Image (cartoon, rainbow, N blue to C red; front, side, top):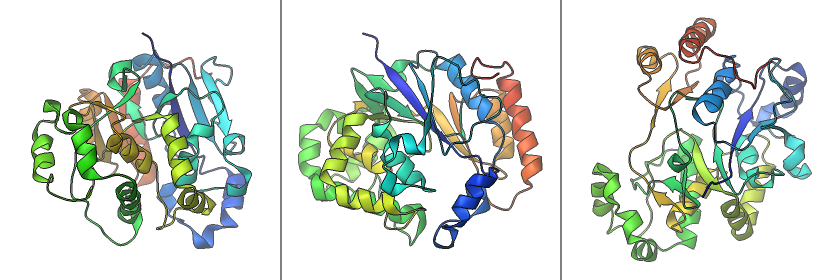
Length: 327
């Protein structure tokens, strides 16, 4: 039976002067790194990939502070433009934190119960089916355990916050007992050995993660808000990311430990750092080695204009035809 599956893409125009002015009012307490908001001018290739390789997507929910790309066809029947004020509670606005934007996604009006959350640095380069994301109404995922390396500050601290909540609500022993086949699926390959090795650990120590699209169910967001309203409220009150926050991976982990997922094997994508992995990026795009790639802007000191031109040439070669999402 066909499933209604939507996709959500958040976007920030780091060159918008009105947005910059509002951000600067709060910046002294936040994350002001330049590379957090650099505009690579390649968002159109995200839409081209969706149209070409995920034609079954019901709606594209484009989440923005209010600005829009000049080339965007706002009349496209599948496009739903969502401003922060349209779905994020007023007390959290304005926000410059991806955590606030993500943890309220379930409030988007008209969003399908089953949806894919992606980012503007993730590009689709190969055909993907509904069953790559949802099977029998369940999000496709992998219960690949690991030992999370806790470091001070940054994303590591936030992952630790996510895991702390997971362990407060779920018993690892009971979860594995109830969902044994999902935890020890033969599809996991070498990751299965790690799950077996970590079996004696009393708590969940972490899960392998990859910066690629995630499949979510709205009801999981609602459930986590119901159970942990205080910490989610605290997270959303922060104008910028904060070390005490939780993030979207709390929802992902919750789906895993509650057995609310369909076990899958290999990941159909790869992560690259711009400026560090340029040769690998060119090879991956030219040869379409992966169905999805993340081109992460995680190195601040690079020749931005040179890198931007390099990426546009690579992406235009792979996705040369305008989509109907473009004017």
